[in-house]
Length: 281
Length: 315
Image (cartoon, each protein chain N blue to C red):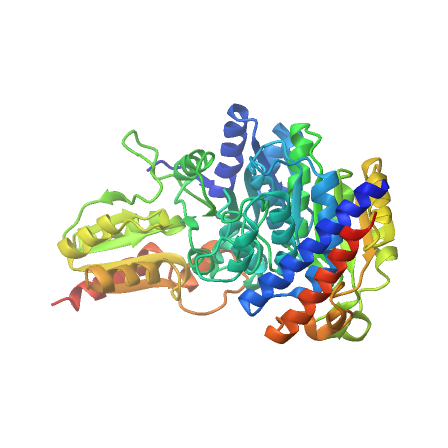
């Protein structure tokens, strides 16, 4: 990847991370851990891959994105704000009464949201439907879905994988955010869906395993997906809470907001990271 | 009323084929039951727009939502038990909440499923579907009404649940004055002593009961309520005020269904006695449909007896 682009992406993602912390701090609730783990890929997707237009969110020929792990809405909202779908100030209204930013994505309220999600295992089916619609209409629309690793414990996810494979939805790319943690603990301790890549492969997917915090690997995976004759599953190894030291790989930050003191520490870390990125030649 | 009997699932299949010839955006989904739900007729006519989701109803509802979000006119079918029951939460969250125009056409509703028994006899679907905000619930009474409902739903901008049956039933609306409008009840017979409000497959026996009652000196009004949500409050209020007694008839649990919807409306708007005929909070069993309808009191005879009793206790 071009170094200039990589720097730009890292700056955008760092800004999105600050957005996430601002959102959940303002809401006094929400899901920072999984938002921070998937935000690099969301940044790349909206900035480099998807055909979309922030000035015309309902453009019929846009590519589609479904946040199947809907609780990580803060990450998507921060990225949409980065891309210009709405003002960054509105991020502070997350989860407040009357806000366009609901706790989980709502397609009828928020510009740029293609599907209402939140109940795990459902978004991937809707993404399959969108991919099917494109196929029926002979359009070259690409459809992307972001799932949680814990989310695939839902049986419905496997119904959707079976469907995507049977109908050869090769313009569908599913990203599985493999941060290894779910509410009750580590995947391996709760009710393990592993081995994930092997299972997706057995379900007929073009399966790619990457580091989900490395833009070069992210780019290569999405490039690979473009030419696949099967649906693609990108299993990205990530760190839950990535970018905020005390949240990293700590399950207690799955669904809780920082208090004022923790907020200051988190923001200072991210500001320092941003200053370092911007200071680079 | 003509002599011919047609199952509303057959009418549904035929209507899909007819509508799809005029509209290329119609897509039909099924979950391995195309032969039974009669979407197989559509599959034969338009295989390229038929999507079999396999035995995976939850995914089917999610796929339906995604297709609708992309502008397709989607009809999704399976048995009522699985559409309203198994897939309830997907219907609620992926279709109902974003108010996507998916038309869920569920067949094999009620105990008239027959021999398959209680596991497949869904008597809870009206209750489950009508509680979802913004969901339109339609329960057609015959061939003519089913076809009219499907035609009306093609361009209807919102989610809808259509309840269809397995059993062949009399055609009762084959007259020139019949007019279908979503949310509007149909007055089938005027009367002054009592009003029988019937829905779906129970409309035909309700009409028959009213004829029997007429010979016994009881003037029963009969109204066909094909749309359970939104309910036609106007026609029900008028009936309550003019006849002072309502009897509801449905092939569904008396809890939460059509009778409950009428009771809810009347208790707030036009207090009146509402007697409910339906499946009395019990599971069904195996047996030929006609025999089961007798066992559970869903016959013209039982409707007439119940109405008679209610009228006699009227002040």
